[in-house]
Amino acid sequence: MRVLFIVAVLVLLAGTLVGELIVQDPGYVLINYRQTTVETSIWGLALITIVGFLLLHFGLRLLSYLAGRRGKLVRWNRNRGRDRANRNTERGLIALAAGEWSKAQRLLSGAADKSDLALVNYLGAAEAAQELNHPETSDELLQAALRTHPKAEVAIGLAQAQNHISRHQLENALALLMRLRRKSPRHTKVLRLLVETYQRLQDWGSLADLLPDVRRYRALPENQLEALERTTHLSRLESALSKLDEGSSSADKALALSQVWNALPKHLSSDATLGARYAALLCEAGATEQAEKLLRAQLKKQWSPELVQLLGKLPTGDSQRQLKQAKSWLDNHPDDATLLLTLGRLAMRNRDWELARGYFEKSLAQQPSQEAFNELSRLLVHLEDVEGYQRLVAENVDHLARELPPLPLPLRESAPAPESDPTAKAETQESERGA
Image (cartoon, rainbow, N blue to C red; front, top):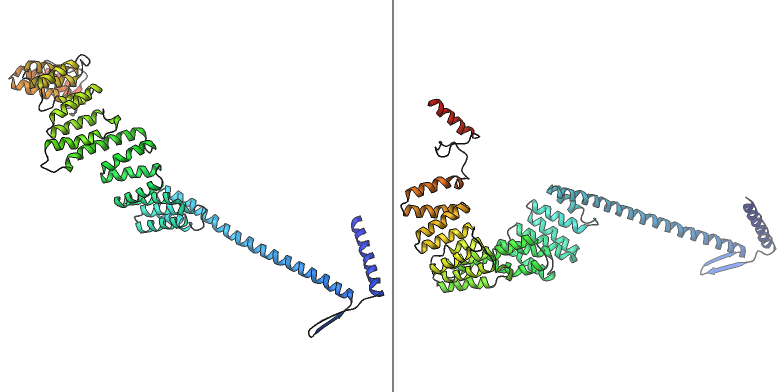
C-alpha cells in the first residue's frame, strides 16, 4: 500500500508539472501532406503518439495471442488424431495376434497415415490381408509401406517374400530373396527363407551352396542345421542318377555319384547314413567293388551297424575275404547282433551252412530281429530241418510279434499260461471243469 501511495503521489506531481507546462506554452505543430493538413499543439502530438503506440502494441499482442491460440488448436487437433491412430494401432495389433484378420486390417490400415508406427501398421495390415486371401490388397499395402519408408526395404521385402511363398510363387520369392541377400548378406531371416524356398523347389545344389553361410551366420539352431545338411546331401545323392540318360553306363553313374560324394563337407564324409546310402546307390549303379571299398573305409573311421549290415547285402565281391575281414571285427564287437547277422550272410555266400546257422542263432540270441529270423528260417527250410524250424518259430514268435494286438491264444503244454493272465486262467478253469 505504501508503494502504491508513493506512486500515486508521483503521478499527481508529474501531471501537475505537465499541466503547468501546457498552460505556459502549449506549442504548435503543423503537418501538411498533399491535400491534408493537421494542426495541433506539441502536447497533443505527444498524446497522439503515446496513444497510437499503445494501440499498436496492444494490437500486435492481440494478434500474437490469437495466432498462438490457433497453433495450439491445430496442434491439439493433430495430437488428438495421432492419439486416436495410436490407439487403433494398438487395437489392430491385438486383433492381429488374436487372428481377427478383418478387424486387424481395418484398424491398422485406417490408422497408418497418422500413426507413429506407420511401418508397423502397413506390415500388419498386409499380413492380415494375406490371411484373408486378398493378395492384391496385401501387395498395395506393402507398396505403400515402401513409398513411405524406403529405408525399410529389407523388412518390407521379407514380408513380400513370405507372401510369395504362401502363394506358391516360388520363383518370384527366390528372385526377391536373392536381391535382399545381396543387400544384406548376413540377414538370418533372409537366409532362412532362402532355405525354405530351395527346399520347396527341390534345388538341392543351390541349397548345399547356401548352407555354409547358414552355418557361418547361425541362421538355424545347430541340431536343425545338422539334420538339414544330412537331408540336403542325401537328396543330392538320390537325384544324381536321375539327371543321367537312361542308357548311361555303370561308370558314368558311379562318376556322377562320386562327384556328389566328394563335394560333401568334411564333417559329413564319415556320416553313417550318407555312407550307407551312397554305397547302396553304387550297388544299384553296378559299382559293387567301389561300394565295398567305401564301406571298409567308413568302418575304419567309425563303427556303424548300418554299414555292417549293408556289407552283408552286397551282391558280389570276394566273399571269403569279406568273411575274414568281418571275423576280425568280432574281437572288438563280440555281442553286435548286426555283425553276427552279416557274418551269417557272408558264411552263406561261402556255402558254409552250419557256420551261417551258428551266426544267425547267435544274432537272434543277442537281439531278436525279423531279418535274422527270416534268414535262419529260410536256411532251415532249405536244409529240411523241420524240427529246428519248429523250435525256431516257437522260441522267437513272441519276440517278433510284439506289434500284434493282445488276443487270447490256446494253451501250450510246454509253456502254461501265467496265473496273472485272466484269459488264460479262465481257459484253464474251463478245461479243468470239462475234465
